[in-house]
Structures are given as C-alpha cells and as structure tokens.
Length: 242
Ligand SMILES: C[S@@+](CC[C@H](N)C(=O)[O-])C[C@H]1O[C@@H](n2cnc3c(N)ncnc32)[C@H](O)[C@@H]1O
Image (cartoon, rainbow, N blue to C red; front, top):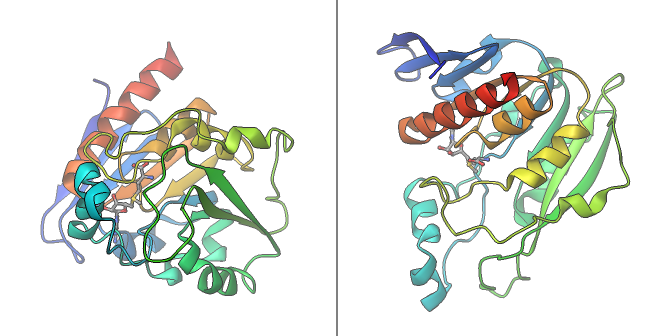
C-alpha cells in the first residue's frame, strides 16, 4: 500500500479532517464546503454531487434494490450548494445531475462559463420508473468551460457514454457509483492536467484521472466512502506505475 497518511486535524472548522497522499494525488476526508476554496485553482473540476430529486415510490423494486433507502439515509437526494462551483477556481467543469436540477444548474453555469454542452450517459439498469416521470435511463451531465479549457480529444466516440454493462444497485457499499467506462470517456475530453472532485464518493473520478495521467485531488466527507476511495486510488496508482 503506497498511500501515506499526512495528517488528522480533529475539531477543525467544519469537522474533523484527514489528508492522504497517494503519489502526486491528494485525498481529503472533509466537508467540501469548508475546504474547497482553500485548495486553490485546478485545470478542471469534475463533480458528481448529491442529486436533488423526489426519491419516494418504487414499490417492490425499491425493496429489492435497497439503494434508494441508502440514498435517503445518506441524504444523497438533497442536492448541493451550487456556490461551490467557482469559475475562478477551475478552467472547466463537469457536473452530473438529475433532470430536476437542470434548469437551476444551467442558469447558474451560463453567466459563469463561456460555453457549455448538455450531455447524457446511458444507464443499462436504471431505477424503475416512478412518480410519473420518464425512466431515468439517460442521466444528464453538463460540461462547461472558459477560454483555454475547451473540450479535447476524440469527440466522435459518443457511444462510449453508454455504460458497457449493468451496474449492481450498490457497488463498494455506495448507492451511486458511476461506471468507470463512462468516467474514462469524460476524462479524455477534459483539458488540462490537474483536477478536483469535491464530492468524490468511492473515487471513480480519481481512478479515471490516474488512467489518463492526470493529477487528482478529491474530497469526501463520509469516512467509509473515503476509505474505499483511498483503496481504489492506491490500486489505480500502483497499476499506472507498473
Ligand atoms: C453522488 S455521490 C458520488 C459518487 C461517486 N461519483 C462514485 O462513483 O463513487 C456524492 C458523494 O458526495 C459526498 N458528499 C456529500 N456532501 C459532501 C460534502 N459537503 N463534502 C464532501 N463530500 C460530500 C457524499 O458522501 C457522496 O459520497
């Protein structure tokens, strides 16, 4: 295990903090709203924050999958503070969201970034349809950028936004882990070398970043998910070096 534990700051403003270094990558177990600004500027910000949506209903399917209840328990259906997105602190940004958040999110990003694109990735096993909404088999995300940080790489391989397989409802004990092939594709289109994910979860962004030779900083407030991220990112870093 090549992760080195750098520090633990109990009782820091906003709650206890732990910092772990894995090669050039840095992971913080902390509240992102308290520490994001202090970490400074990155080429890109890539976030999968808590969605805001009506998570009721689902009947028997809900019981069988179990992920919906964990989403409620961990408040992953309560949305996030968009003010954490600061164009002075990242040249471009990718944000995953629920359809219900799109009007507010696009309104927030539009005056702050020069251009943006609304994109979607295709889920092979979406949650069952409920609450008189569409089946959530296409999940939106937005890529917005300022001059000098426009999308790079191959733009024509859009099929890669289709997750290659079905994901179990819970992976790594987390209810909303993003598939790595989708993360890899998005990562390839991000300009620059440094990036930060303030809502890292189990570290999928970090794994994809390392596979592309980028330098990753992640923040996660839940110590259990943070431990999973440390494990996954350590293993990705070892494979990158091999
Ligand atoms: C949608 S999940 C991210 C899942 C991640 N993309 C993955 O593949 O594992 C959002 C994560 O943000 C974390 N989170 C929520 N509020 C936070 C905060 N204020 N600071 C840091 N992390 C936070 C949650 O604990 C959760 O793990």
